[in-house]
Length: 100
Image (cartoon, rainbow, N blue to C red; front, top):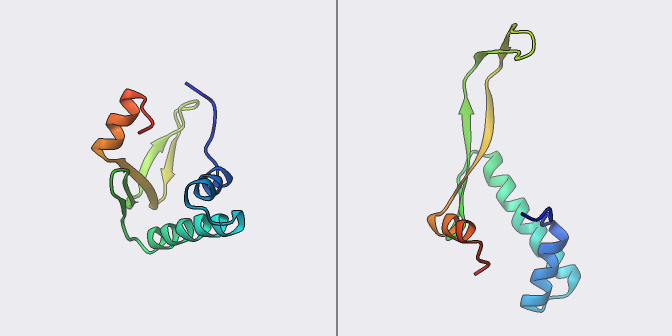
């Protein structure tokens, strides 16, 4: 496994090379897409990207947890968490290690 991380800069560079927009326009496009996704998730909407996966927000209820070191009970407050469910195609790509 590689330790490489895909960054916003990498995404905008890929858009620059594939689409032919300027580097500045490519960066703005990537930022715009990520902002739209973030806004939708913050409003509780689901974001589905075909052949990639689905991002959704899930509400977790309050519960009692334990400190693993001391065994003390600790209340865990209710919260919203982001979940990602990959598509079957994405699962197959990752399992096979193929780029396309």
